Length: 517
Ligand SMILES: Cc1cc2nc3c(=O)[nH]c(=O)nc-3n(C[C@H](O)[C@H](O)[C@H](O)COP(=O)(O)OP(=O)(O)OC[C@H]3O[C@@H](n4cnc5c(N)ncnc54)[C@H](O)[C@@H]3O)c2cc1C
Ligand code: SF4
Image (cartoon, rainbow, N blue to C red; front, side, top):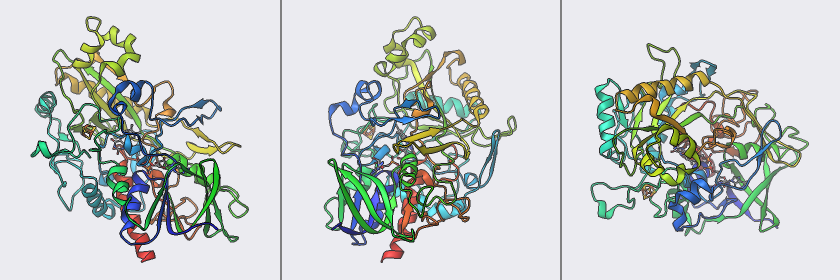
């Protein structure tokens, strides 16, 4: 006899973990199924070689490109999902991102809800995830009903100098919103120690506001919440009419188990949520569960990102570098009719992680060894929106494995952003010819593998013919199935996606609560 729950949540990352946190207080029986385990706390958490060179915390999955060539996707199967490794840059989308935006490669479509609809949930998510920031500095930011719950993380001297130089050059640098538990006013009491191994690393001292630490851990003692780790959901079964999910098929310790719940939320990340629905095809849902629209798996997006290191003669002794953002090119400018994107900082380069890039580095700075190069680099992360294209999609092969077909969009905008960065460097004492690409998150030779910002495979909307989910993220075709991760994004904007996934989980959680209580 399968166990029965009020709500079953599949996946414990930004979407699923936050949803569980929202629902737990109701006292309803909640089962959280997570295919990974707790990320081990060990010295390797903060060691660049195991993390970046050996990929110790990247899943062993193989996905396949359109030609059937296998690659290892940079996904992370742990309690907390990708947020265990994320940079915790917790941005809101801009109000305009919720409307239609014209891009060089086409249209970024409007969302069925507006920024105003999301604003209260953004505020709640910022409170929950302890976001540090300074409202009003970024001219592209939307209105806020509440100030950031924590003051912005201060710039270290080199970043302050860059910020000052940019402001003198007429740009509008701002303090980037960071989800780290840093208490600068009372450093001895601070959970976060402000270290250099944050962006892309797990936090050894659990001071990063990730979904495990913030959302899941606090629930573990609750009698109404059960977390099963090592529990990979492989299929969802429905009743005969196909309107209700009745069985959740799990592989755990090599055994097949089935769980039952009144409400089921799929939160396994954009690619894996599409995979699960597609692999749950049945007579009633021959193209995959909830896929009468043929939209499941389509419109896969993951941002056009570039990690760039710029060398300057001055040393950059910054420890925690992710404090600065620049959105001067987020929208069309008088010089360019399309949006180019967001510039922010990425974790500080270090010699160990740079080792794989040694040939280019010695070309750029022949007089410096790797250690010197790392000491002088200032590291930027450039994000350009990519568009939801139906042909960019997740499908599954005959063995149910992920196949990813993807062609980039808005490449011209990404090039433009890179050119703007090079101009910026002239204001900050870093010559444009001392700029090179890093490939920490994204192997430039296998861009599909860099799927950190994946989104869009089950878009929400009002029309069941063109969307998978309704505006509450419930599947149009089912009565008890929700998808609550980055899959619901109809477009992705050009800022990091996690805060939007968290805010949406709070919003959908509220809808589910009103249904079950
Ligand atoms: C290195 C890195 C840096 C990043 N930096 C930032 C940043 O600074 N700011 C930002 O906003 N975003 C960042 N992101 C992206 C951000 O982490 C994701 O957008 C966010 O975590 C997505 O949330 P999600 O709920 O869709 O998926 P996830 O958080 O990945 O959660 C999915 C969960 O489902 C589980 N799962 C998968 N399949 C199954 C299955 N079949 N059965 C059971 N469980 C399953 C997974 O193990 C995982 O726990 C970063 C990501 C990475 C990898
Ligand atoms: S900067 Fe803070 S949150 Fe980030 S890894 Fe270091 S201690 Fe953890």
